[in-house]
Image (cartoon, rainbow, N blue to C red; front, side):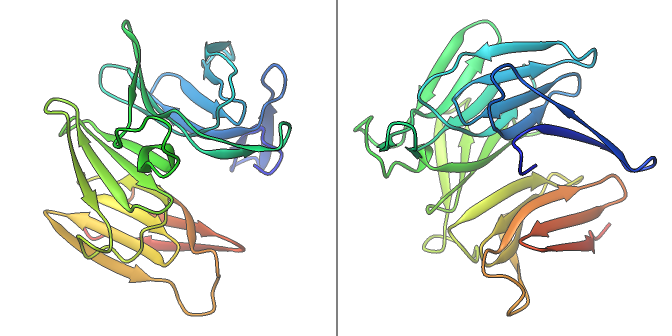
Length: 239
């Protein structure tokens, strides 16, 4: 939430509990492998939070900013270390890009541009990640380059932006997979849905917000929730 703390809500009791990490870094990203929660922070660290409330740091603090996390079927953790303004140092910090933290093999970095320090590399500007266990591929949303689709087995990338596809906006704020494996995307202009090679767009109502759709959640009864600046919307997915 706005405090940067991990907060768990009990909607039945209408109570919440907050969890603090050592040093109290701001939590920017969350992911789960079904057993534990992974939390990425604005000091570049990543923590593993177990059901018994054990906290284990798996990536140490550095001059980074973890904006997004995903966990694959082999429990490798994919995370985005992105460009950001370091207020303490008063300068613009170039991120390391997309990184895979192997369960047994350490870190592997990914950048699309040859110049490893290029600030405009889309992988240094990732806003959201989600891993598709069915196809064993990774989806990444970016600040300005639309959606990227990565296939690790062939080391290939596919770009979906307003120049090469029908997606309605290049500024991506969130990604979620639906129960059928299709991709739902939150953007500044609204919601986009990708399935079987086709994009379908759902623009936000005019005047609703100037910040767009900021987050998505899809629950077991095929309901999709959309959160934004001072609004929450609910829709029902087709069966």
